[in-house]
Amino acid sequence: MAGVAGVAGIAGCSSLGGSGSDAEQPDVAGETLTLTTTTSTYDTGLLDEIHPDFEEMYGVTVDAVAQGTGAALESARNGDSDVVMVHARGLEDEFMRNGYGVNRRDLMFNDFVIVGPESDPAGIQGMGSATEALTTIADAQATFVSRGDNSGTHTKELNLWEAAGTEPGGDWYQETGTGMGEALNTANAQDAYTLSDRGTYISQRSEIDLTILVQGPIEDGPEILANPYGILAVNPGVHDNANYDLAMAYIGWITSPGAQDAISDYQMNGEQLFFPEAVSENPDFQQYVPEGWSSDSADE
Amino acid sequence: MPLESVVQLGPALAELLHRGLVSADLLHPLAAVDWLTVPAAVDLPFREGYVRSIIFVSLYVSLVAVTLSTLVSVPVAIVMNFTDFPGKQFLKTVINTGMGFPSVVVGLVVLFTVSNQGPLGSLELIFTKEAMIMSQFVLATPPIAAISLAAMTGVNENVSDAARALGGTRLDVALVVIKEARYGIATAILAGFGRAISEVGSVLIVGGNITSAEGISKTRTLTTAIQLEARQGQYETAMILGGVLVALVLVVNVIVVRLGDTEAMNR
Image (tube, rainbow over all chains, first blue to last red; front, side, top):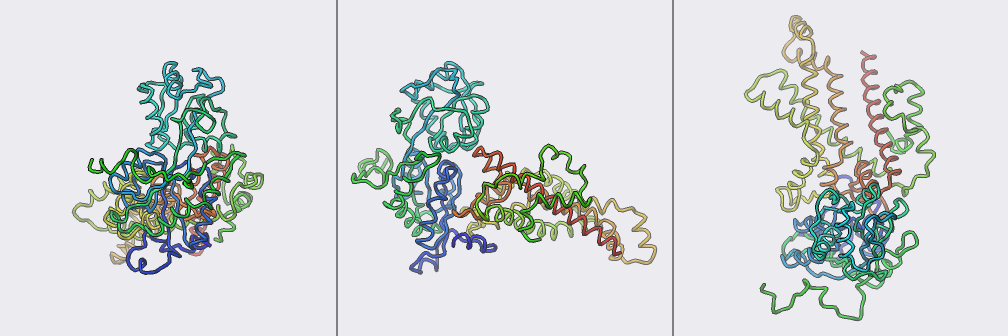
């Protein structure tokens, strides 16, 4: 249904917001939700798999724009999207503290892995510590490919270097400024190491020769390699054109048991890519507010 | 041209080659790839309607943009060729510089214009075909204007002198010159079309490379689809889409050239 609408809507193709007269209509049918998200959720095919359910349920269209966490939040900051699905808690917190985002929920998680050539020139295979592995790579001056694009993965990588107390730089450290898939291809072509989210690595594994050398927490690796995804609505108090009703409907749907099951069931090459996190007995208040936030420190 | 036939580009190209409409020399750089068997031999890894919809978006956006560009830039070129006005040299410089505008810069400028915070923010054009048409319009207009102007300037002065000598008004002279320069103007439009349809930087930024969950393109073009496939390491499918794009440009060129020939024959 939505596909037909997509083709037919040649001229006045959709609007972002349900502002003005739209707000007076009780239902959201026919509207378009703009979701800015990361390449890792998009390129794994997860969103295409689960979105038809939501679109059918509400009679709406979801425009998913894959940009990388930094760019996805920037689009939302400019009021160009309604809802954001990203994976860099620090950037999400900043986004919330600045008032751009509301109603954040923990959505799902997977983990990061350090991948590299099977020959493993730096000798990091099986290390239990991600920071130790990175320090070893730096000491060996083995080629390391960095995303260099302010994405969630890039942010995580920089945090890891910082935690390792090593300043990466030199000929061996290459910033590609590309998406995860391209960074994996680049690393593959040069027998280099890189940090990847597990989902993109699994979805691309058949095309490349890189193997996982340091596991993330899903396979009992260090907790520091956890990769949690969050979802936030754009604050309608800042951008009155944001389609807040539909954004909240989307957040409600994707954190519901049904959609969480669909996320859990989504597999590629026989492996589960994302682990749902929204449905829990634990109230987990921390998901709604910036990390470390308490009412006492609200004036910071 | 029905889109269904565009999808069957391999056979169509073979037919054109067979009939001698397309010189094999033209295809020389592409000879390394066996274009005639690629679409048939590979089981296309795309969902139904996907390729057709991105071809549609590519053609729709580029054709609308180039049509608008032509409506603006050919009259500008005519005025510049037949009249003198202050700032003409400056305008010429602007147009010539415009031919080299990097498409990502144009994309950024259009993004800032149509973004919610920008001057056209209230129109909510971000991530739509209209925004893509805007950026391609900016990209295609300078080459069309510059090449059209060059074509008209290049018309032999004897022609305009003769028209004037035969008692032609200024309008008559202009019409004669435009008629003589029509191949050059057609080339200009094709150059603009080529720039628009093969451009990836700006349409990615302002369009967002969106498809529906069912795989029907909203703002995904052939170029941004190729970029996406390459990002995912799917070089084979990227190559197939690249072949479709090249073939599409080729077909449009052949059609325009053939139209020109028919016109010449009817004269």
